Image (cartoon, rainbow, N blue to C red):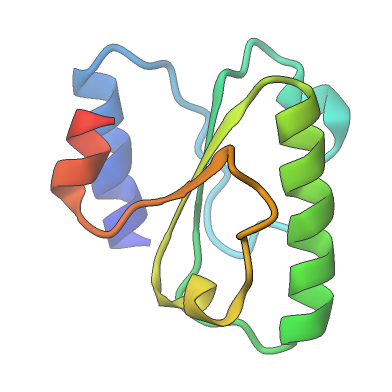
Length: 102
């Protein structure tokens, strides 16, 4: 949660408006939320208990975001277990410098 807050502060400095949903946010995000003046989506994960279920939910989310022209950024060790290769609009961030530069 602390790392995600730090990312939020970096993005605020860059001029972005944020909606911070907090920890343990359901992965099933509704299309209506993404259509709310959203051009970027940041998702952090530290641990994934059910890889198959999470992969399926992330595939749906990545597809929906891509269809809406939303660039998705992911970070955290939880994503080491997921395959995002089918989604070119999803970019993995590995450090805070990348958050500031992209």
